[in-house]
Length: 74
Image (cartoon, rainbow, N blue to C red; front, side, top):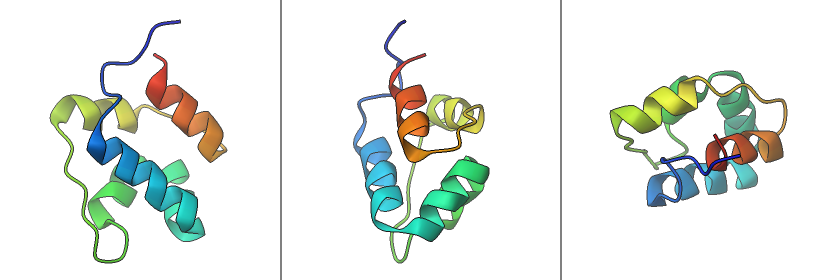
């Protein structure tokens, strides 16, 4: 198991924090990560570089814990 190059990152941490506090954002993140990030959360917007966006787009998870694990570990 190797640590993923997109984490740690301030924007990734903000995304996970938003998912923890808001069930709707969390569900959106789990079903369509890029759309959830593009839509943002409340007044918050998220800016990721291309490598981060590409990696998040490939993540499939049914829980936030699983999603977070896949962000950290490749």
